[in-house]
Length: 352
Image 1 (cartoon, helix red, strand yellow):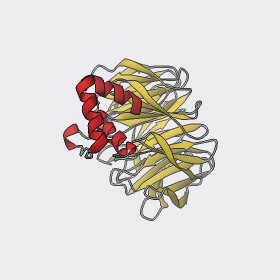
Image 2 (cartoon, one colour):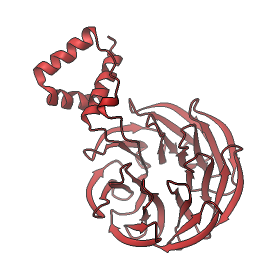
Image 3 (tube, rainbow, N blue to C red):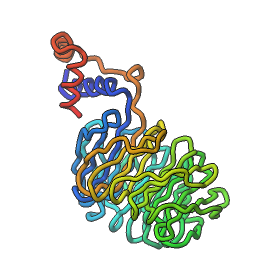
């Protein structure tokens, strides 16, 4: 058995031991790295060196690839999540700031500071189109059906048709608009308005602003829970997170958080919210039942973008490669001498 095949077998074995928990990926703009956080233990299990000043990060829906935008070198690092190594680097527009992956996994959209959007084919890691938005952009999200891409910038939201790669509509919002997210059913857009201290609610069917919600000081990013009932807004200027009831568009709680909260992501099960705090280099973990910070994870320097992968396949759904030969002998010896629990701890620490 080849060593790499054995390592893959052990990696799958460890995935079963991990309880099928997803990983959080944090773009450390001050450390030129992406931290990989195990959500089951709230610990950093790997740190991946990427390009200069990674500002944002996105995970492909299948969890196999992570994309980090490197603002100071105009590239995107493509990370293989099985090995946590950079497997490709894609040149994009000037000073990229944001990235999103289509829910169907086919395209990656990268915002450049010069007002262009680079469209990357996820299969080939090649830029297949460049869309001129015309203004510096900050936030990007793709509709659940992968048909529309929403870009914030210039006091508005630009709507891109993903089939034609053209801007088909512009929704005036006003002020400085930053983070944007879309409800799981695709019916609502939520946009952080930094200087007006509000969250704009947009009807995605009519492309009109239908409500605004007063939040904290300098809201920068927003995330929605998997069931669409709760929104979480990071208030950069007052070190808080606003919790919003999406049914009534009202703030139901305000959570004190670490200094300068920025990127935010909700776990697939909706039980945890992860917030990157730029100033102290940590990720705060919020329990959504109590709306309290229950853990903090030290990462590297100036964490900004944050994303969470899908749940790993449960052990029963994992097809472990046949070991055979030396592989079976080694694994069998390990089980016999170390015991199941000790073997998991020993090998999982080595290969994660």
